[in-house]
Length: 179
Image 1 (spheres, rainbow, N blue to C red):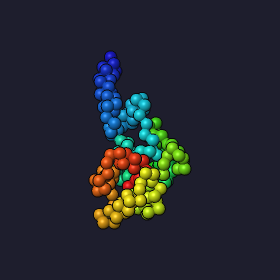
Image 2: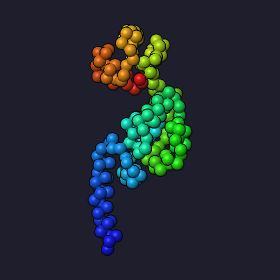
Image 3: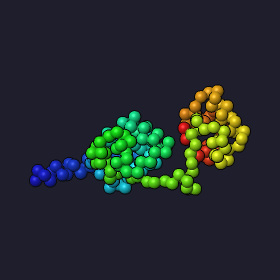
Image 4: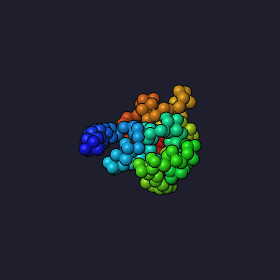
């Protein structure tokens, strides 16, 4: 009888958690129970494509660790398993292993036509910028000149404002550049 009463109390709490996780795409998981609920809902985090915000959903991961992992992936370090992730974060595997049900690791061929090579707009030289489709020589000169005068671009919004780009151009560029 006592067990049945406790079970009934637990169900509303679990239902509420489930609803929060289901409706909030940035819900930060606090426990392995919440990870299990997310897995039941079909939520997965592809580490190789994850943003800092995606990684911050994982319990026990700091913003510093999330930034480092994203930066490593952006420079071309392949994180293809939970073991790779543990080494990259300098964390014990035993600490990450319980998160494995929600994590996926995908391999993306850098030479694939489906996955365009991203160029860091803050460090790219003239030749690198010429590899970006639809970017004219005039725009390349403007990017380099503006970058030299005002410093690095923070993100797509900053780039768009500084160069007075319309949404169509930003939509095209975002697939080819990184910051």
